Length: 598
Image 1 (cartoon, rainbow, N blue to C red):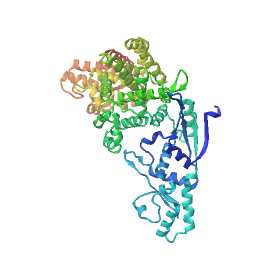
Image 2: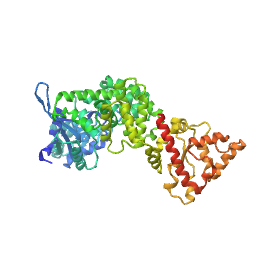
Image 3: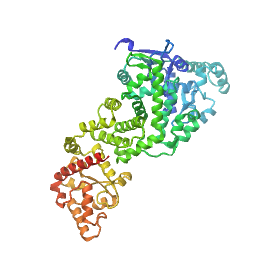
Image 4: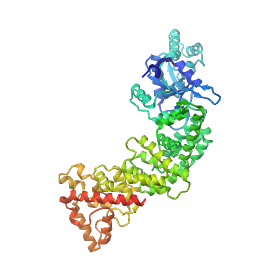
């Protein structure tokens, strides 16, 4: 790496604060809740007072961009690590208000005991104690002169050594002359290099994602409304999880409450659906990919900087257009009709509970697909079926499990280039061949992982097809998935353990069925041949003992929809391996039939 790629320098705290105040360094996180506890602000001030190192902050240089008139606008430095420390400094020294985790705007006051050289978070008791200076901010910033502070303090504390007091106040105001390390990264570094530098420097080993870099670019751009756009993304994601914060956000951020963004997300205040609670990286990826027809967030970082990928230059017009497109994508994402319609499509495919969806990437791309097809094709009646099939295909094949960005990039470009019906048919022919259904999927079901995506797809198939739970006359698998019913071992776990089988054997997903809790308790650890004999017998006597089914035809139907053998001898312990093998084949066949019905 050449020496021009980055620089490492020590700067005075006062200089850093001046850069932040002038906008030379942009703080992208300033609008997000301040997550530091007040005691950490106190500790930071104490470290600076004592002359201890407080780590490095990292800034990434925005490229200079060409203006329409031929001029050049100098790029700002964007703070990508150290936001909390810089915000803490501004809160303690410059009386900067912060938004806390309850979305309330608050002031953090740090008090100083000059004789004990001790810092504390100000409180009513300290405010009344004359030995404390209740707020160091005006003193360090120069709003209050040290000689005036000393005169008032000595008047209230006549026994204090005057020279010692002046010395301590001098050390306090000297905080602005203490140094902090600033690593400045060149704009032409790629994201992978920036990430590697970040990881190596950050003592906690925290990894910044490409979404983090993109969000920093967004928030630092006030010219094209990026700071407000950043709020919209954060607020939506927070409200999706905690709708009760709507009132606080409306009350504490009156300016944002008047924006189109906030009006577009108003519906969340009464929304408790948790099937898809997107994080900011999810929202950003969907909005970007659906609008820009690109899958790599590194490209978004470049576009938001005004990058022309052909000439490799940076242009203001590209920067402006990119922000406008992203804004449109975010508004599409948070639109109530789009969001609820998409969730209805996912639910209608049998994925009725969030725990069933093991691939967030597959869910994100399904929403990308829905938004793009809806925009391009309007009310095309096949969109719902197409989205369902693409989503389930992605789950079954692990399409976005490895190198998801590259796969999304290929997929969105393919969708852009040809009719979707043709593309889907080709992908299905390639990925869902007879070999996949009869061999690959059967092998994938040979697992003891209850969270296996293919097992979740089997449960989705049962929910979609309206299958009744094992031994249930009226209660469906969908009902039990929605209300967290019991998963039952057909060959009970303790029964198999007594046969000497290992966990990997008795917890095979082919040994699992959904069952009503009361029936599960009654079965307990009974040998499967015994309890199944009881069930067959109750179909002769008409007296229910286990479950409500008392008709042999209905029992055989129930066993069939749960992919279970209908002959009693299959439930003998010596036939367990054969039971598993047969059931895996039956489960794969059910998933196949379900897929083509979507």
